[in-house]
Image 1 (spheres, rainbow, N blue to C red):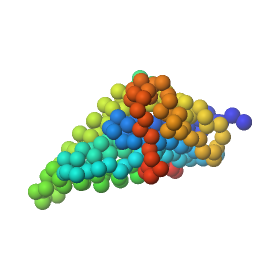
Image 2: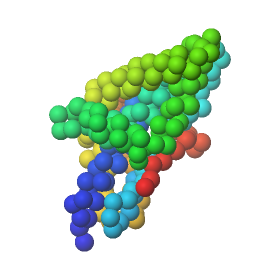
Image 3: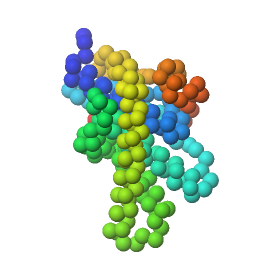
Image 4: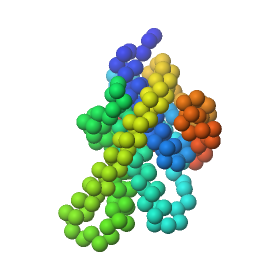
Length: 210
């Protein structure tokens, strides 16, 4: 039995979301692994995960700042990639709604990291208004950077998400795109070279589910 069209659309959205995390993570130097998605019928449930290794040596404040900024962009990338339209542009209304809805776990993690960045960059903030001003300024800057990264790799994100979504043939069945399969994809080789960045067995899993 063919997957209903509305569930096929959901498979494509969650695929794009997870591929967005993975591609931006790789661009920013994180090791990555498998991607999994599951469409949960009969209505519109889903869950997905992209393996990203978070362990990195950080021996200075500058390295902590860089790591935190890269991680925030990676977290933002899922909602942004999910919102891509046919022209490869981010739909900001959709992305914001997603980040405050289905991707709220991503946003919660990002907000904690944004606080760390603000604490380091503006250690003398004592007034709440100033704290929020600087927090929003940092968030907006990283949001814009994440948009540029997602849009610049929109074709790669779209191609891999089409491939992953096409493997979904039934509800409640996990579909996996392995790190090896990703690394062997010609467009991935063209974009990142032959050096693989597959996650180790301790890779962290970004999971989103309804």
